[in-house]
Image (cartoon, rainbow, N blue to C red):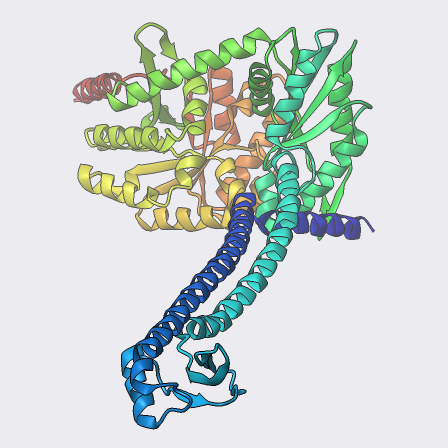
Length: 618
């Protein structure tokens, strides 16, 4: 039932998203205006054509009437002039009619005693001296302009009808487009303020609601940012559609679990936001409600338990504007995410101070990398059976001009979070292998971060640096942590095997702190195990530490690996680890990390001691 509900909600969200793409209000509005204008122009054009046709017809009719009157007058004048010649003119022969035709310009002139019924001819009566009608002249009517206009009327009428039909159709289309535009505008207005997937208010709408809440000075406001932990893993596993279904289910859980009066919205892909009027304990209650809602399982193909980091800020205590409140809630969220999954942090001034400090250190670190102002120190690694130096571990150090020594625990995470780790790793690798050339009897151990391991160019870089420096591959040891193996086991295995193919050795650092170390020992090509300093520091104080170390050593030897213990600070720890069977040791008991020159001095003293021993033996 839960899966069906999630699928139904997801399908509804997809339909909302599809409807959002179906029309553009700007485009529909332009089309509606264009069609409406076209209909108006067609109506005006049709009316103008009809008016012009009527005026033209009246003008041609008047012109034809004027020409006809002129012909009648010309005929009367010709008869008056010919009367003395032809006498009473009671009858006319054809020759006389042709003469009158030439004098008057008439066509097909005839004379009859009675009026003809031919409506296509002009007629005029002939009177004798006493004024009596003695006959009728008729001739072909020449009304060419009227006949032309009669034919033009057909064209004008057809055009007018066509234009009228087009105008009606255009007006109907304009009405349809206007209705469509109204619907589209409403849809866009809704989606401008609504998340297409979940139906929640979106980033823009939530900031507007926050402005409205802050405008009410009578009550405080709690603003919470909720960021889902490791949501990309769900997206990678289920695909985009499955990930959307999980987001919809989370939105429903949050909506149902929030306190009354809390407004839920969606800020980013995997980030939600809550706005709520603040009262005593409101922030804590809101955080608990969110955590309770997030604890409910989600069923999409299988059961998912999704946690979330929560950052809280409160107005007016932490900020007075929506933008500032959101920014400080985001700072609190970042602090919560650094603490681990499911953490909650409320904004404090120290958080912003730490953020400002991190931004400063980031800028300084970028500058130090660009100017090659970082140092590489080396800590000796000694053989358990006698304390002879067998190798060194390269450790990056940063001495700031004003801050002094900045510990790796501060600047290494900063580099990893801001895309600088690959450049830092390359600096250490190049410097360490170049320095190691002058220590032919020692191996050089270099740490490889999870960020470097994901870099597809790592293998090529290692091969290129070894070729440049000329160092033997068997003297290079790359140390990796279990975090590399957890992120992407298949990719890590492929890359480690490619590195092994170069001839370098691989060490598993901080062994024993992960939750699946034994399975990694079976799957991945390791040459050395490093026992984490947490086990070493508790030697002699807890009974279990010695047993665990003995088990790790036995396991490593059984799999053909050497075992190195780090963090040794007392002689008692050295003795116990030697008895446990460790092959190599590292710690302050033997030497602190130092520059390359310190290793040179140690090797020189060792050679001097050996030389004195040889002389004494002789």
